[in-house]
Length: 170
Length: 170
Image (cartoon, rainbow over all chains, first blue to last red; front, side, top):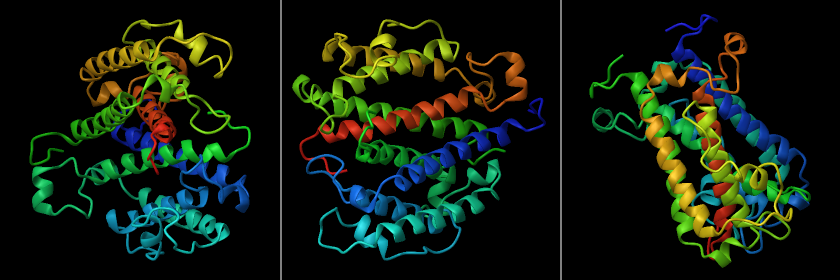
């Protein structure tokens, strides 16, 4: 099916999904840019995770998308132990906020480059955590599923990081 | 394109997107079911929104999807003034938590019934807040866009409501 703008429905669906991804990335980038190292060292609520832990967690989760989606190896594999396998306040020393911000941008830029090369059908192919045999039985375990899942993951933590803004009410 | 399970790529994409929606709905339903009226009356963090306001806000936003997606009229139009047009603590009296939980389920059940009747191409058609003329120029303003946007909206507030759980750490 072609729309009046000569974009197929399939291409339009990909466009809308990628826009949702980049919107979430940009919101977090902008929010974090407006928070100081001191702000990010605070807990989002008493006794809960700190901003820097949540930021590091998102960097590590997005870094893991590189191998999961078949784009290559992780850039910062050491972050997994600190920010995914361990909870906050586990005794690990954290990278600086400046380094995490830089890694966040670097990884997301790289992901977007790879995303832009995938067409609709490529998004429906398997991700690397499922074998070809299992994928034949469970075809919903595709790259599109991963994209949407990580988009909502960002949104979840965005709703938390926004609490570090002094005047944020939602 | 057909997969081995005879589901087209287009049908698979719709399946994955609806699964993402229902996953978010179910997570919030389960979370809220485990929170008491007293828990939900608390602020998610000092000086921030209360749980009941966030719940009411989500009910009102989902109710508005009925006209926005062309499914009918709102069931509880009075909620918009309290939970969308007004911030928390604006002096409005709130429905009870029990009523909001019931409305949340009722509206989401109804939405899912309507969703299940839309195929891939129908999801790419315009939503009701855009005119046919504008849609011809801006075909990304489609129902799929609304679905994804409201899915991430739920996830955003889920990340906040989870802070009301005593032992929640993420």
